[in-house]
Structure formats: structure tokens, C-alpha cells
Length: 127
Picture 1 (cartoon, one colour):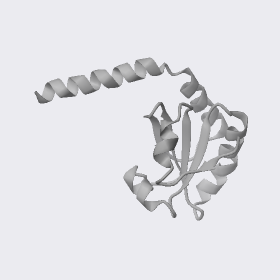
Picture 2 (cartoon, one colour):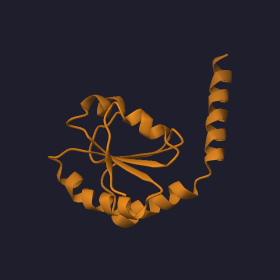
Picture 3 (spheres, helix red, strand yellow):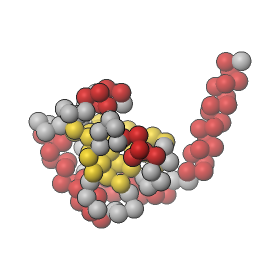
């Protein structure tokens, strides 16, 4: 599967999908972004259980600002509407493979339970 392009109108729908989502925030003028693109595309081709998406920050400035993208490339990983990873800088192919393995191995029930516990704890502190 190849990558898809996301914009402010399609981004929210993409993170609601049940498949994990890896988003590459990039710009055409960015050298490191262009160097990382073939690595990202190759990972997309061999991992069809994950959605790989790109956001052109030049075109989607509002979305980039909303998500606090301050440098590019930046990778974000979402699964079951939860942001699991956000990091600026290009990854090597082996680093991206390791990230993908971690995404697959993650126990999302536990993640949701931890989020709920944090939210409940924050609510109790405010009371």
C-alpha cells in the first residue's frame, strides 16, 4: 500500500480508523524530508496493516499549527485515536521498522486504561 495525503478535512477521519496511522509531516523544500521519503514509502509498501500518510505543511499550515509541528520532518503515530508517538527528525529504515514493531506489540487496552486512570486522577485533584 502506498501513502495517502491528508489535509485538515481528512485528518480527523484518518485517526479514527481502526488501523494504526503513521503520519509524516513534510515540505517540498525540506532536504531531510525528501531524503526520508523513500524510507517512508518503502515501509508503507511492506506494512499493509498500517496506514501511512503524509501532510504537506506548506499546504496544510493550519493543521500543522494545530498539531504544534515546529520542525520537519515530524512523525506522529496514532492508534485507536490515541497519539502514541511524536518526534521531529527523519528515522533510519531500521528505526522505523522498530517503531512499527512497537506499535503492533502495544496493548491498547492497557493504554486506554492508563489514559482513563490519568483523567480520573486529574479530575480528583481538581475537586
